[in-house]
Length: 333
Image 1 (cartoon, rainbow, N blue to C red):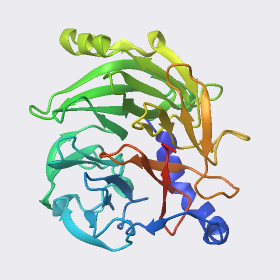
Image 2 (image 1 turned 90 degrees about the vertical axis):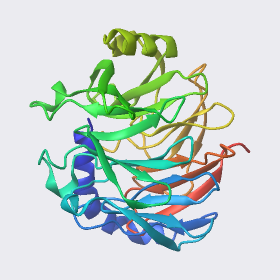
Image 3 (image 1 turned 30 degrees about the vertical axis):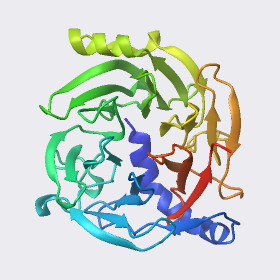
Image 4 (image 1 turned 180 degrees about the vertical axis):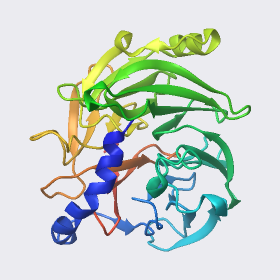
């Protein structure tokens, strides 16, 4: 998993204070600010909804942007009261059918390693209200819907090993109808990266942190993933098709043109890749361009989301930015 992400989330806030002045001076295109994260959380997660607005998950609460381009958000939902204060958060995803959100509590935020909080996964109707706990997937920070709204793929860490070099992760499939959790890609070395699904239904995942292999991304054919589900025999990471090595391989998203967008950053390796979002041709592994919406210098770790309607507007926010600024970039230009 991202034990590395837990480490980053615990320590990055101190480093962020020193960087805040530089961020405030950065030149920008259109920007907005996300709602502040709640007590016990380390960041605010976000995604688009179908009309181009953002939805934000602050740990205990979910807010909907009042209008595209606005920093004004309205509270629409919350996790059950008994789980308050126990979310990183990991991620929020809008279902492809537009009817609900999936919220991941990550490793449980300040409540880690309490098993009542670690990996809590909630469903919240698009209309809001109280989120429903539907599963527990401990140490989960990245997810992606499959080709429908009934299945979710999550990159899950396999404990906190000692030594850290023994870390590993896996990709699981969560059946949203039954709550069944099933591994589909196993033996991913190092701390977990992201997971993404391309337009053909192929699955991409990678290594979030492992010295010498951080950012390694591999592709798994849809038919092989389907076979892993059918036979309950997960595919080994080693047999996936190598795509590229980029940043911390998380998040992994696809734009309308089929390009792979990679966020995060190798902030734990001296001289490691960071400070940009990578746009990669997944067929060749070629880096088409580096996108830095802040147009500045310094250590950065970008969370990203892609709009669900046009597939061209990228929202990006640097984890180190205490202002929670979101930049918008047209990646189809």
